[in-house]
Image 1 (cartoon, one colour):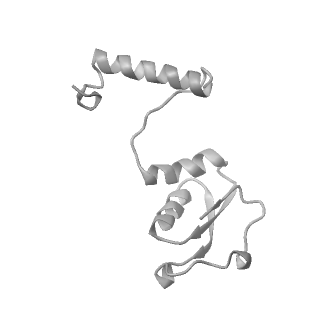
Image 2: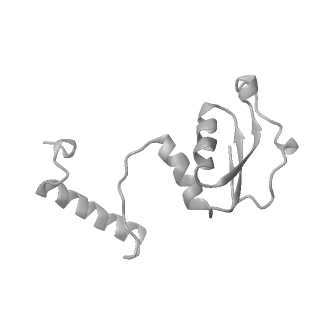
Amino acid sequence: MSVMEMSYRGKEFLSIIHKTKSDLRALFDVPSEYAVLFLQGGAITQFASVPLNLCNPDDSVDYIVTGPWGDKAFKEAVKFRKPTMIWSGKSEKYRKIPDFDALEQNPSAKYLHI
């Protein structure tokens, strides 16, 4: 049986997950006051993780939207922070990218997402 077929409540799986958490704590020196989490999710989960982990709720962040996935990233950031879309190629069906020097970036933005 593979780990994917095991019950997450089963003794075998619990043994694997506890060992994995222990190994990750040691490898990355994770302090005991932090939890090690295994979460499902793909790109959209990461789009939420970036603003949640890189800045505070009132911090500003800048987004350059060059495609549909960038648009999804911006929409996800809106849920958690105060992003500013400094450029979007949506009206031109994402067929070009901006001249970087012409963009009005916020000098206090915590990050620029492209």
